[in-house]
Image (cartoon, rainbow over all chains, first blue to last red; front, side, top):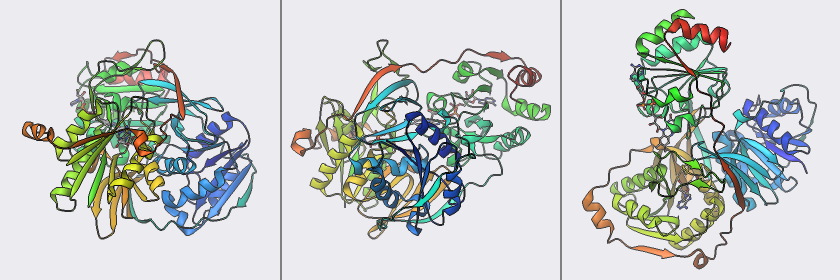
Amino acid sequence: MSVLVIAEHDNATIKKATLSTVTAASKIGGDVHVLVAGKGCQSAADAAAKIAGVSKVLMADAPHYNHELAENIAPLVVKLASGYGHVLTPATTMGKNFMPRVAALLDVAQISEIIAVESADTFVRPIYAGNVFVNVQSKDAIKVITVRATSFDAAAAEGGSAAVESVEITPAAGLSEYLSQELTKSDRPELTSARVVIAGGRALGSSENFKLLDDLADKLGAAVGATRAAVDAGYVPNDYQIGQTGKVIAPELYVGIGLSGAIQHLAGMKDSKVIVCINKDEEAPIFQVSDYGLVGDLFTVVPELTKAL
Amino acid sequence: MKVLVAVKRVVDYNVNVRAKTDGTGADIANVKMSMNPFDEVAVEEAVRLKEAGKVSEIVAVSMGVSACQDTIRTALAMGADRGILVESDTELQSLAVAKLLKALVDKEAPGLVLLGKQAIDDDSNQTAQMLAALLGWAQGTFISKLELGDGKATVIREVDGGLETDSLTMPTVISVDLRLNEPRFVKLPNIMKAKKKPLEVIKPDALGVDTSPRLVYSNYREPPARKAGIKVPDVATLVDKLKNEAKVI
Ligand SMILES: Cc1cc2nc3c(=O)[nH]c(=O)nc-3n(C[C@H](O)[C@H](O)[C@H](O)COP(=O)(O)OP(=O)(O)OC[C@H]3O[C@@H](n4cnc5c(N)ncnc54)[C@H](O)[C@@H]3O)c2cc1C
Ligand SMILES: Nc1ncnc2c1ncn2[C@@H]1O[C@H](COP(=O)(O)O)[C@@H](O)[C@H]1O
């Protein structure tokens, strides 16, 4: 049986989380096919065809597949799914939005946000904010799965030469309409795939003070993230949030500044290779998971650190 | 318009849950249980809609053991009008919950169903989407702003890149994110009043839903522990360690 991966893309390029999902698919075994559904998505489909390990690309190009509205994408995936044993997509806000709709229409369970493949029917996922890992076995004929991208290496973006095949378009559901988006603009690397992440917490106190972290990030070529407290307070936009209910990251280097290390935050960054924290309270829980902790006032330490780099 | 709100009883978010040593489950005996924080946001939104005159009745529903009545009572104390518990002692997985909710929607005919984006115990983030699929309705997920118009709802969704605004045909299913509102504290007199509000208890069978689990969970375990690190005395030492020991900068 083959595995179908639903790609996340912007019609021109394939998002990195898709490459990790292809790796997860390869671990299940069988051919890996990729569906690229979008509007004017030929370039993205061509890019998908080059991913190492992909043997076929299905392309569904229609205006109503733009912006991945779940009501329009789900019927397409459902229609294609019958030929597959597994359907996978990244556990991004896109995948989390449409994939459970696919599962329900197929009358199967969804296995959310897997972090490892044990066998073709058994997967590992975190529960309770990452405090517990559990094996999940599915007996359903089609396994519908979302994949935590940081838990799987990215497949090589080049090297493959799959054929691109157009598939029949399913009609627009006419239930929902995309109106607009307000994307956070940044010249920095994307939070979930950055090599270095600087994260700030409530202690930053204002959006102006987050500039301190920007300066440090610029020196390190890092992305900037935040805790829920910092987002709720309006210091930074919602897409900065790292944690159980935000983004999951696993950079080479994570620097947590003026944040306590609540379990909900740790759930999103505990897999970072090297963890550094700067906090004036030496009892803060973040020290327990940090490789290097510096006790001090961020407003003196951070400028000093930026200067020293 | 009637609104249905799904409220789940979960381990309180302050509890650090551990796996049982024999791997058969999570050790949640005698820990504090609360309403799923996202569901508090959902109830709050329903109550605000009612206060704004856009909603006539709020029905809070929960699925699970008898103690879920406490969770429903909390919703009633926040301002819901009545409750329904679909009582089951066997584990209810998301698809089963979605099917039970669908059966209740068929009975109650609400114009809007509000759920949390994710239950903080299983972290599945799927029930609302499944319910919308089963109903053939539009879905608005991870919502930080909800505006009800004429036959349409305009929603702002929290997505990976920022915020997205969509228009949804009503009736619709909404999954709420934490920044939609700040739930009110429940006042004592309202807790007393909530005790008198109607709470119906029914069984899954009565709704004609097969709730047998599809997924088998095993080998509950602690995640691999990180090895303890060190405290560095100053910035110079930190930079030196990152350069020469960890070799990450
Ligand atoms: C359902 C739910 C989901 C949640 N999801 C998430 C999530 O996804 N991500 C997330 O991050 N949180 C999440 N939270 C919130 C989480 O529980 C914590 O409240 C939050 O992470 C705390 O943020 P913080 O560490 O910035 O603030 P605090 O806990 O207030 O910590 C601030 C820290 O800054 C230190 N400090 C203060 N001044 C200075 C200074 N001048 N210099 C240096 N250090 C200083 C203090 O010692 C303290 O340790 C969630 C909560 C709930 C209920
Ligand atoms: N047993 C349940 N009883 C009531 N509501 C539930 C139940 N399970 C899930 N839900 C609702 O579905 C949302 C998402 O849950 P989940 O898909 O499990 O992450 C929750 O926030 C609740 O609103």
